[in-house]
Length: 345
Ligand code: FUB
Image (cartoon, rainbow, N blue to C red):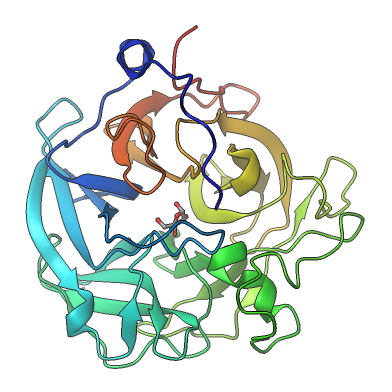
């Protein structure tokens, strides 16, 4: 992921214009997956560190090693960091790059889902279990069978079924799975195996979880994201096509699938009638933030809806040192979501 010039940004001015401030500033946090469990807010973010890795378009500089869970009693309360909840050294199958996680709650247990690079250089998704929403989490010895790529997001439907959404391009390796098995050709080229601009874009994946929440209950399926005419978005449609950071929420009877467009830095959404899609593209939830990546979650808290997101304002623009923020969002009467500008004009 290239670093873009930030020399022109006056960060003091930018922070004055920011619509929200970092929830914690003693550590860097990113990729916030927020949940309202038992009347309290829990945020499962990446824990950004500067591990000294050189920048590259595979995201090697995102060399995170552990996860911390953040909690808040209410939307206005102080955000509390509960310390290390899971470290890569305790995960037998994972070597490095503990990227964007998510969590779920079922029958008194808490499940932390996380992508990491295995010793063979392939991203897989693992799960770790705790009796407590803040951990510590005990990892399963192996990654989830048939899991691949990054950015798991687990949605609980009203019937109690859980579905995992996942996938991410470039360093997230989704393009390497296009034919059904991993293509390790040209390992240093982040855009090798990406479809041509006129071809359909790569799609995110979904799988229902087993009752014990530890495996996929079915083979993962691709999720269609289509335009208003029902046509799949194209790979060259960079301002709308899926790149990474899948999330699903349900508002009234509609399923909202949201995601990052990566190299164009938008958080977009698409709507549908089923957790499997198809989803019809609707628009932007969040305009670009400072920093290359944009990643979010949407969570209902006491009848209001909030966007959890990150930017690199606290680190003055360092791509891999990000900070989690939150702001309220609005579903409008036509089902659209009002676009958020992260900094006021
Ligand atoms: O934090 C590492 C990666 O950057 C995440 O997995 C992506 O979604 C992007 O935010």
